[in-house]
Length: 154
Image (cartoon, one colour):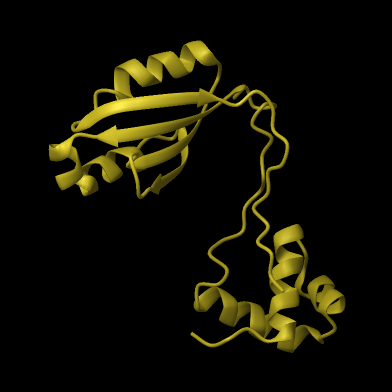
């Protein structure tokens, strides 16, 4: 992949802030005419810099009041079959993010649920029943100080 030039960095910054911009609006903001701007956006998409464009939804407004971080430790058998656990996690819509970690914890999950009762049900009926799970430590987030998908592109 090639390095990003200043125009491409500006394009990415602007699209991170507002992915609904038309090419004409985007071109004006970054200082290009429409055709070269469109070509750069097209290249950024083809080369995988831009993976998609989505609406950012307020989870509370759609009834997802509980925000939980779960640290999962697998037993020796589970660690030998990380792919099996990973595939199962990908199938849970409640899990927004999942990271493989180094250290005493194998995975960090970011989970949403309607409320703590819904999380408890998810925890006991689905998450804790995955093969290889040895221990799950759940932490409930009380409030959200910062939440962004905007990467610092300089």
